[in-house]
Length: 191
Image (cartoon, rainbow, N blue to C red; front, side, top):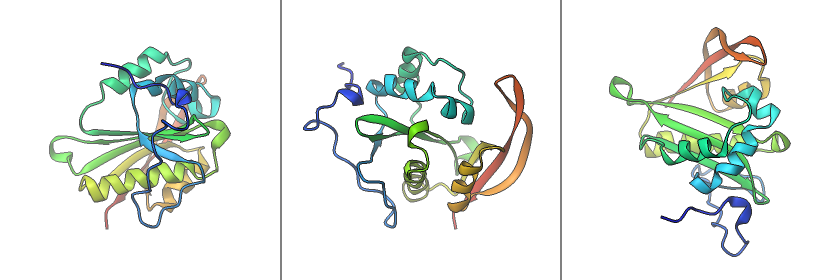
């Protein structure tokens, strides 16, 4: 089985075509494409996850190994949708949606990150819009959940703009740079 080439090695003629947004009212920034993650994306995703802003907003530890990211991509369960956002042959964001199991099969959990140098350009909005459309229009989910650090005001504002509501706060939720930090539990129900 041949691995997919890393995104940065796609010549323009062989680069996967940009997808159209799933949501009818969505607009993506010029030059953005979103597609499913593939093993060849591992080095680009690891590089993005190493950035201080991305690392501070997620539960990822410092210095992710490319091999570990590749294995994670290769071993994702069938109940997961994992996307990458690409601009200028660079992975500028990634996002995932995981359907829960058992009596929570109506619920999806969302996680995402955007490259430090590409924040506040509409990348997060585009990724979140795709996940919400997939969850409600393709997977028939009725509840989406996420956690976000309480000091991540831009992310909280983005989630609220998509109808996510604050449901509670997890105190001392995670260790970040030597300190315990709180996180909000947010959710959106399909209307």
